[in-house]
Amino acid sequence: MASRHCSVWKSVFTVHPVNGATYDLAMVWFLPSRLSLWDSMIVASANLAECDTLFTEDLNDGEVFGNVRVVNPFPLKE
Image (cartoon, rainbow, N blue to C red; front, side):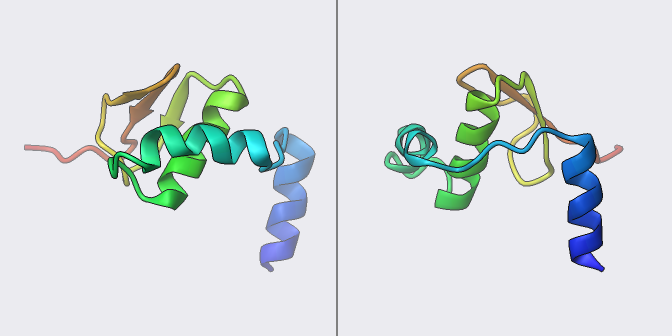
């Protein structure tokens, strides 16, 4: 089931490889312990893919990392 979903996603979206450049940029946010390694890799990948928005509920809404702004798609309603 998961492999079928991945095949569909790959046919619709551009997949950017994780490489040394991704790791090097991720260290900008990981080393000061601002983010976990995995979140740092996601943020770095989004920057290298020239994304301007990263939709996630795992980071702070409105925070900016490089050229990427975090948007929580599930904001809490007061």
